Length: 348
Image (cartoon, rainbow, N blue to C red; front, top):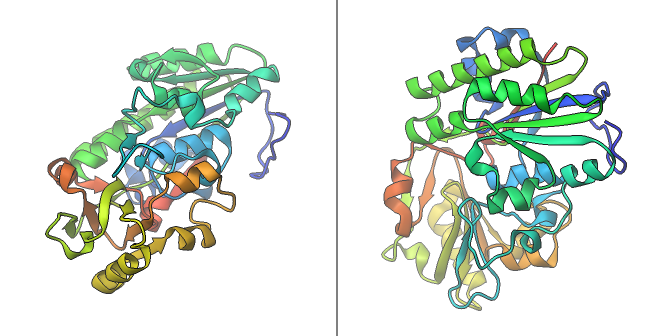
């Protein structure tokens, strides 16, 4: 759309007006397997897949989308991460529920693409559930756009049309019904299939209602796997000998440790779990560019002393939240293709 300082790396045709629908939880593998549920998925053009940043979770990837930066730069490193200098063992910031003691404008300082576009004269609008309009997470990750609330498909279509009325305009649409169904019932379940049908109907209605001379894209923030083996990180688990705080989420754990115990604890985790997980020390994570090539000092302070990423469908359950996490059938955050590969669709 001509925004200075950006690159059209996808080599797509430029347009004065563009619309992006973000479907929370729509993995490319799941779409390939279950796209038969709605004819629009056979009719819409499929471009090469995109890939979630690590961790493959909403907090991280909506911020990557909103800023155009890697997690190591924007600092939103997972669902829950420790607030630096918050005592011992410290307190976790749940980025979707937030903490009134943390200012979202200083927690995530990078100007968003919405803010930059607005300064360049592009009319930018965000359309989503009315409850998300003024949340700290929206402020941190997606600030700068005019927000139009839409709780139903018909409202979203009408708000999208209104958002694209300006001659140089961008509309960002967000829906999370598929992610909710996946967490509750699992990918491929009857409720998940019904949610995917609703997504297909929304895409169809948008293609019929939006102006014909715009770019209309559909993508996601991550995919999802159904839980297999569940490992509870309780105090009776030998893995927890030096762990003072458990952050992240079941498919990507930030583990905060007793000072000086990093090497011994990493050895314990690697020996005990063997082929079940990848275990990174903080230095390992930085060297592997797990959170991107550029990592700010603030991000280094926030990330866990160990990062534990389970293989296959294994999940690591936080004992303080094990009942809720165990009840969830679908999970994401890890690095399997089901979680990382996300589609990029373009309406004709």
